[in-house]
Image (cartoon, rainbow, N blue to C red; front, side, top):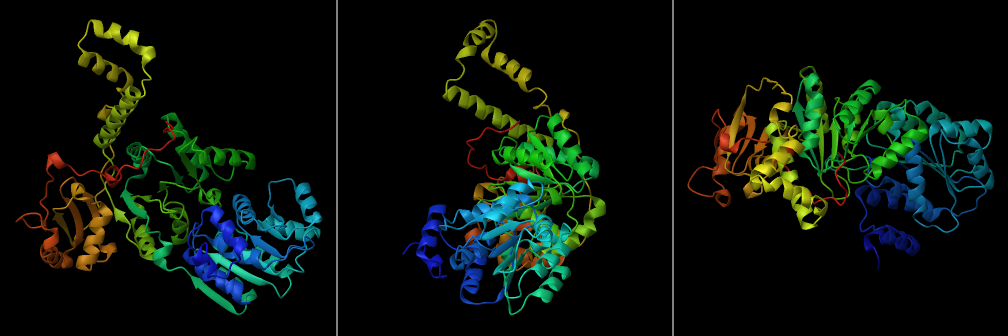
Length: 552
């Protein structure tokens, strides 16, 4: 039997073949929990799961299985917060290949005449944004009297965008026998009130917190002054040669400023905020999805509904306003088995708010050290060596051989090459050209700095050091801070009261011992210069080379 685990959920052979053609293998947690309830009961559903967990298939597949295409009245209405999400959900449902099924997206910013024509011709499923759906209901061009399923997707986002009163009114148009499926990453009070008002015989489905905070997303933060944020951002981008991510800012002004500064320095960047027209928005997203630009700077509202695969980074340039926003932001990376990194910049005045948010996230967000100017220069040197090796390998130098011979005629090869490098890369390879990012000292009294004789050559990264202390010493990851991995050793800060126990425990694990020296001890004040700590970003293992050239 194909896709046995999906078959066990009660899906038909035709649907299983469609899933197999799309590359599905096993159900995600939200799919495994939701599909049987929708297929085998009449209960309403409240499902708590974040973006990117497979919610569309979780509610879409049971609707497709049970719906009989008639093209007379709308049988299912799926409400989503943004135009992009309306299009994505429509495409996803259509990709399941149910013969005779008619699905249409309805959203603002598009010609209403075409929507009127589609609705008049008859559709089975409508996917739409609250404002335009309410418009059609008011015109009498959308009839919900025979509605069987009403899905509220990303309900907390609709609340944040001010649509919740529209949603309330839309529900009042539907017949009383409809089932409601409400999905939300978080459950603010207003969403709970809406559910209590309209939903009955409710089945609560919740993906556990450890699944909400994706294990594949490494979450770190940097303490940085507001005036140093932009230079911090460019250093991170520079040391990550395959950076492909979203940079979140709180205001439109900040988005424009960051984008303009990035472009001025030669980075391929685009910006999204509320003043960007729908046509321009779609053009920008098209460029970003095709990686014609690798950096998208956006406000929270403008980024809602964006679903882009394989993002390597999410950068919180501005601290999220609340826990819910943080969850939605970082949920865009670390998907489909790919590792991702969520980076947050914290200014001194934001530290208290960040600490409170970190407590709600219930996962470790590590403090790390920003890449230094030396880190950036070393990465750029490595990239130059790599590019030169590629040119030699693929013999794409023939047009320059005559000029090379002229230059070499009166100079030693190493001098000629050094001069060429200076001419081409002087500014990039001069550490003095990188502005100083001043260190912020935070009061960390009550902690002990550990020296651990395990480093990168042993296969360790910061997250693995955290996991080691957590597993072997029973120290909460929220109490482990400022982890740094060098070639042959690492550092970590832990509470004073845990230090003696941790040192004793780790030094007793024989399989970790490499010689007669203690594995763990209290660190000395100074770090040896020949093994200087580098940033967590710079120390990450290199990703497999991308088939796309880097956009600089």
